[in-house]
Amino acid sequence: MYSISRRMYRNVFAVIYVKTDEPMLGEEIKYEIFAKDIGLIETFHEKITYCMMNNCFGEQRIESARLEHVKLLKYEKN
Image 1: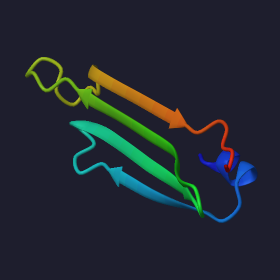
Image 2: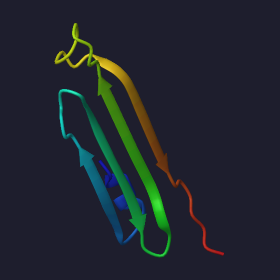
Image 3: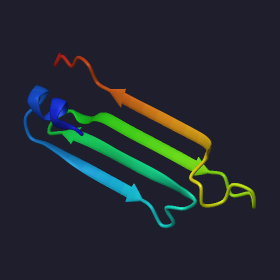
């Protein structure tokens, strides 16, 4: 998931949030990666909400989805 950032920067750590309280309703995955002396270098957030109407509940039919992936591509010290 975050192996690219580990290769590009030294001394990185990840904060990983995984929220799947009720997999019938949706899924949410989020992580942030930080590098020593730089700060936040990558974020990822994916949220999927399934249909909850009577005719489709439990079928995991996607009602809405959001994907956001932001990476620091270049860093230069002054």
